[in-house]
Image (cartoon, rainbow, N blue to C red):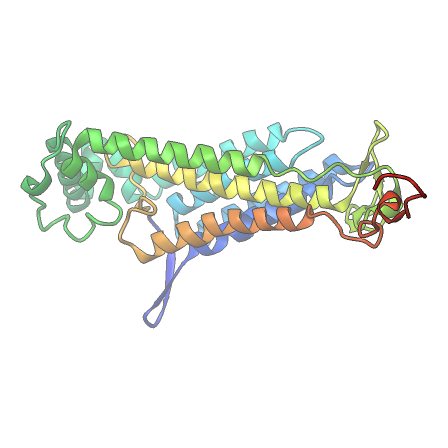
Length: 343
């Protein structure tokens, strides 16, 4: 990805984007929902919250010495989370601000710091000569992909030693295209399309039951003044009541959609960057096809684990409550039949 995207503690490797992605996306969804739970000044509170989130992204980029791949993935996840969590109005200003930050960081990394991966994509012949070894590896990988044609070379695909170390990880897209051909690559793209459309439909379908009009039936609801979750039910302008379950599910759905968006963005980037030189190569792996342990674990734990937890919380919060009134038998079933009445 470029920069310092991982730390090593002995033999244990900590992948920073994988570690921080769930934290920053859940924090984004939480602060947006909490900041909007006030009658007056909600826009100002939300602006402060989103500004802090953007500051965290910039701070991560600086501390990671220019991890443009991981920062871009987290930035796109933040964009999806804040849009999904926003209910009163969409954050157009911060969307534009996030775009400006991305463009500015990319420009600085390209012009002033001459970032290796950006220079290979946009630096022309000068960038290719400056990072010659890296350019040869990427060119070799793209030649492998093109050599596969439509139906692939299978066992006839020769993998040079210069790219053999990365061909099963961040260059796996080129290996798939060369081995299985463009047809195999198309099948994988269709499989990803079906997977992500299905998982998005599952998350979007998680909606808590409508709150009842009686406040005593609501276990948890939203405070009108403090902007936090409290026992006081919230009365909307249309007269409907909103309890805490709806607000909690709003946070969880925004978080789940954000992490899905981040992983989908990573898939599209990795899938095309290996084959198209003008798109900067990221170093990210094609999940979960890559042989990288971090790639597989992040896909299973961060993506599937997050969606599973959100769905289980939804199911548990919408289970019917069994009370003593539910267990009463109908009066007609215990009535003693009159004399001469057919039973």
